[in-house]
Image (cartoon, rainbow over all chains, first blue to last red; front, top):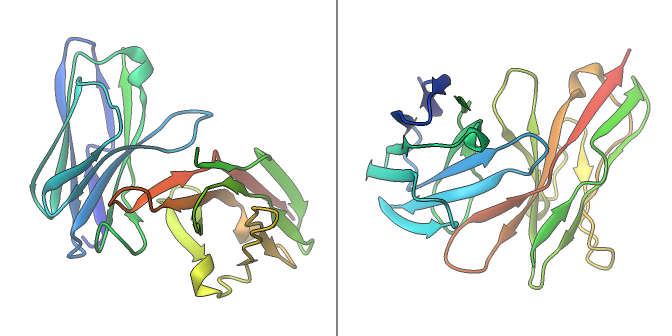
Length: 113
Length: 111
């Protein structure tokens, strides 16, 4: 599959669970991003990785832990989440961290019970 | 602080009518602005960026620095234009390609 893919597409988890979201880009880009999209709120940038190095952490609670093992893969590890963390989590990539259009994945719809 | 404002949550027009989706921004430097679109059951994708000065699917947007606006316009709406539209501002502060998004406007084109 081309472009940016995300798995799973839907996830339901309890507050004590540990789960991970996965993002993969097939575009040869060097920068990857995690966004959170909640109802009635703008898209919120969570993390930015450039060449596998985290360059931005947008004051995200520590219960969200990103991991970027290589420039094509990005994970978001989740543990002890709260119901207010329920949202659509979008992954995006761009050629470089300092320019270019961002390409988005389809998102993972997360529900925390 | 950098901010993008889209005052309309919903804009409903009839097919063939002109469309204007409003976007205002606040930014202290030289902004770079984008419009992203999300059609039903599709992913968010770039529609146009102001530096390209191009027309995509009949849509245009002009950056007005005096009014700090970047409104999206189309002279004749089509049903397939129905989608969620997000205005975004690129923040040059720091060393990242950071996009700041508005809350979005749902465009509904009625037949």
